[in-house]
Image (cartoon, rainbow, N blue to C red; front, side):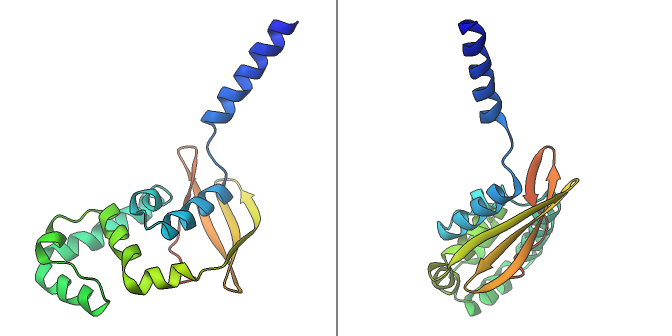
Length: 154
């Protein structure tokens, strides 16, 4: 009987370690990634559709890297045309998150997480940021909850 209990406990621990995090955990990871200026971690929280849209935008930037560098300078982002030519999605997000404009905004964020609502392959997590409450929509992709929409709160 003791052996059965130990085997059951081990199986339960393994199942918990391999379980996909819920929608709220994904949203919390995304905001933590923003606070840490970790583009790679934030990218992992996005749906494949959102990543594809981001990659399309980056590809457009690469078609006119000099112009893109000037436009980014207007946003306070110092990046050269050569850097844009070599930019990937995670690098682009990190660049944005490390910008003076964005890092100042993130440093002052007061975030609380509210209700989580799941309906089939869609979910919503209530987030209050600096007194403003909104819901972030997620979808279940291949057993993982990922954010389906941009951050309308910014």
